[in-house]
View 1: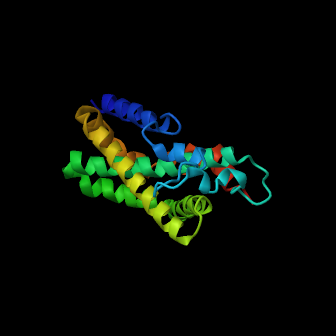
View 2: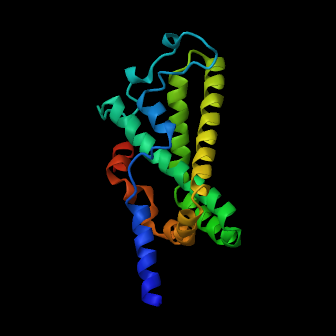
Length: 199
């Protein structure tokens, strides 16, 4: 039984480690890749918003195409949102493991705190660049933050809709989050180093 359980555990962890890039559920990736060209919260002419595609927001002097920067940013940003959605879904699905899973998530978030804060700042910078003025930025930022929350809630509901699969994921999610292979630089080394080039 011990060997069988360990094999099942490793198979589940590999499923976490080898998931597809840029989850299909997240429109955040699409928004970033499109350069927020669809900012139009008040029914104004979409062409009135400045498109971030005209300016490179990547590392200074990197010369990287804006689309590459946006895709890399989306990949890292979406992974954080995916982890939060999974943590929240597991709290509902397996309340008896709530404390252990929350502790594991808090540890993962602590390891990534500087990156998480920076990703949020970069996301806000893209929205600001696509906005006409401070008032427009406030409206757009609120709109897209609401979109992020709604998409994360949608992902959580999608996970909860498949209880058997979710139960298996939740059984190992604490191990996954405590494993260094869940860290963003290891999961997405190319994307991470393009956003944060080694000094």
